[in-house]
Image 1 (cartoon, one colour):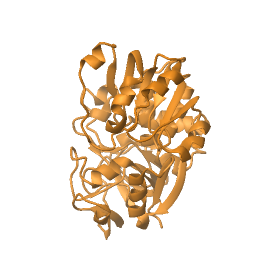
Image 2 (cartoon, helix red, strand yellow):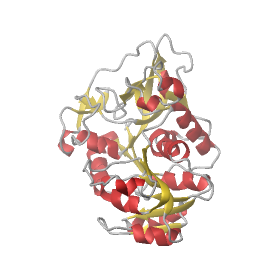
Image 3 (spheres, one colour):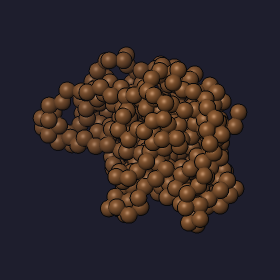
Image 4 (cartoon, rainbow, N blue to C red):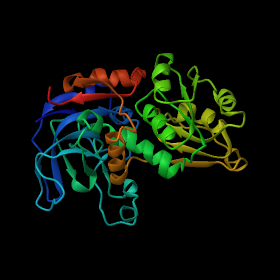
Length: 347
């Protein structure tokens, strides 16, 4: 099969099209012909070497996958050839540890993140994913939408519903509001009954951010502290919850935007830079610093149902052939993409 293989960390030149052996399913594997694979900034930081934990090179990038089942292993019971499916971001979990048994499989010690661990990822014609990490795509949901559901929608559902515990009437700040995570976080926060303030450094994305349901939009210059304007938009005190899709570049401004007892939920990290933090800045205001790591299969299934019922809209802006993967990564690095960009390995 054809695949984009990364053999060492580096720039765009390390993204190389190669012919590699077709994968053969193991006992619990579902073999999927990839129809679409989303392009996430996670793959940028994996490719350039910023992310190292859990990365095993050479590798095939890509964890936002939807397609059609072509074969299954002997122990697979839930899926069969011809099924339309989407994947969680992992190819393997143990299924037996205390995390897997309590709905926290995203932190299973054995988890293998798709596109990080070896020659098994969505930038290819086929991928193997154990059935614990696969979900059926409901009728009426396109494979375009299904491909980005786990990461761009499911992770935000995790952050807003499970980790951030957003309640009706909460004031919620969404950073990186015009990006692939942010446009879905806005919709989910609105669905939870929150008053949503969105921040973005891209004026050209303001119209989409408002269309997604933001009550207030704060435009800022990169490096600027936007917290005073967020507080003003919230009524003067700050927000109850921050859903932070950016990380280090906006961390301090996001923290300063919180009201007493607020919750800061880390979802994305674009640079890998460290930030200065005095613990007193948290406990004197009773703040909670939390994180949402990827998506459980239950959250993936719930997110697919939200799309099927029309309660959330998956925002896909463009689909490129696999041969244009370098252009896709370049645009991600430049921050020029609203919503999600997809790769099509079939062309």
